Image (cartoon, rainbow, N blue to C red):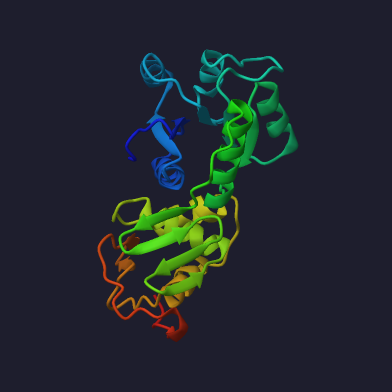
Length: 254
């Protein structure tokens, strides 16, 4: 977690899915936000007793979502909460979104989401609430790799490659787990959504595409390792010596 400073905004997170929590924490910790995740209202009350957030990100399907909104001053009214709220929902229908707005959220984001959209909406909400226009810090460093989240660029030394939104989401998702394996099912759910009907190898194909751009041979992984029988794992320590984005060669299939 990024050290707290006077410049960082505070974000309270109520989400009960650890993988999504990790992804949000990594995405927002750009020197702009300090994230504190809670698993329920009781833990939220403990945090709020001594810590005032600038933003709350609430899973609207969480059992304590309405109760936390009430604690923040926004239940069953059309007025906004004292603390601005970004609601998350896995149901993107209009009725669900309207109910969230009726409960007082400032914005609603459908899960799965792209990292750049989460960051942009969080910044806009807090900027609108505080009236303070702070510079966006769009990069995050992962080992020797620097990722520009807004422009979806990866830099290593003098090399720069461009990622698609899905490729960036995959890279962030794997990196957010701090070297732990993420299953194909977890990746599919977090990046494409539980209701997405996909061909059986869609995760492997996109991981393969990402590896090609990163020049990551699966036999000697520097960024993404295959974990037999489990899925994929981000390699937290690596070297980019000799990495040249203009000389990418296609590795063998994952």
